[in-house]
Image (cartoon, rainbow, N blue to C red):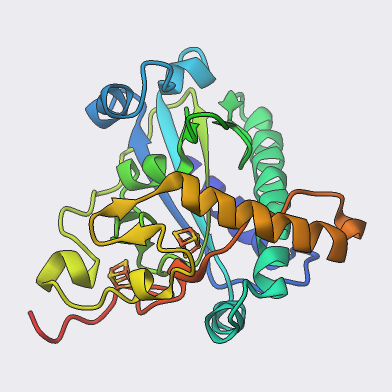
Length: 257
Ligand code: SF4
Ligand code: SF4
């Protein structure tokens, strides 16, 4: 009942979104707030990394969701040499949409006495160390929505082109099954690498991501789009070229396995 209410609310907000960007069907997953993977993130990322209980006292479950961009948005970013304006708009609009989803979930949960907490969809990171102390993507992995690919994005059933959000609630729900196999072609059989080839700066290699180079590219794009889209009064530190490969829309087909 609670799960259905949460899933229905997210689907409803996305279906009625007043955005230029179009979306595919969202995905929703659930995890125990005391899942040991949340603890290990503190060790892997930084001591400041948050537990669900840092977001909501008495946290019992985490809910993560993925809002996948329409295929057309991905294709435009794939085809153009620079980051496509449609991708930048999708980034901005989806961050707003995720905040709307969180507000709607809070309204619905208030009606049945469930408490809700969340971190903002973006700009919740340390700009010096380029670290986020609550990663919606990592929360989504723990909630069974996908697995990380070579592009450092979470590949889900609906691919990696889109944005993730998450909330914490003070009610226990049955956790979703986790994905325990790699969904990235490179990790599965050493093929693909399209994300690395698509990276305009060389920030992404098969050895990992140079966050400084990547962020520099994103800030350059911000300068371009901030002027172009001053009506939105937002930051457009985006690129997303590495999200337009064969894992953009779904789990890529592994024919060489
Ligand atoms: S583009 Fe290919 S190598 Fe890169 S993350 Fe996707 S499947 Fe993996
Ligand atoms: S966002 Fe752009 S610059 Fe950063 S790794 Fe992906 S393709 Fe490279």
